Image 1 (cartoon, helix red, strand yellow):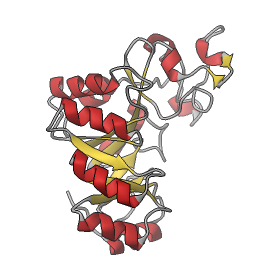
Image 2: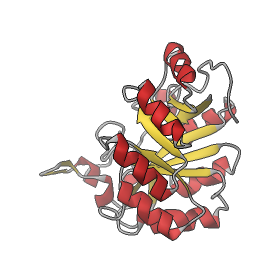
Image 3: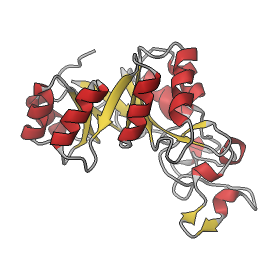
Amino acid sequence: MRLIAHRGASGHAPENTMAAFRLALEMGASAIELDVHQTRDGELAVMHDWDLKRTGRNLPKGHPGRRWTRLGRSRVGDMTFKELSAADVGSWFGPAFRGERIPRLADVLALVAGKAELHVELKKGSGLYPCIEARVVELLRRSNALKWVVVSSFDHEALRNARLLEPRLRLGYLLGLTTMRRALRETAELRAESLNISLRQATPKRVSLARAQGLRVLVYTVDRPADALRLEGLGVYGVYSNHPELPLKAENR
């Protein structure tokens, strides 16, 4: 069973930072997961949350990340990459990581460079972030990364857009609230390679249905060896974990 370092080695370093990705590689992770938003000026920023409230520290006075709108704090898509990268996203985790910045997807691709499989979750598609699918596809082409990157999303329209742009693209389908009947139909239409589900959703029936259609089943977020062992018994292909050192019986590389 494959272990995918969730947001990098996020149990040991601040999630979605270069420190977390470097550590995941050093720990021997054969696959790494990250999240991507698009900034106001069209940069692909590696970050999970929609704003800086949880992970952003030491924002300069007047920084847009401090502002509040009727929806809450200013969102990633409202800021330029320069504004977003002014945030210290390491200090919240520990003083040793003070000064860590939000990376671009291009930075992470250059670091990983095929040394591990990279799972890129688009937090939203063109409905919110204009042309994000085209930007991601073009970046993967320029980086010669199509073979070792898997693009996933809960926004299934984003997956459709991405597939139309690049027939060779590897896709993962995040289930969310979608029914299994619909998911099985859409994964076939998209030619997705995996069905990605939560630990709670990982029932024997769901796993069996997905595997019967030839899908790899990936489960998030698994940090207990007992859960990993149970999932391996169900035939799950891989798990997303904050701890790349999580002991597994075997790994499908």
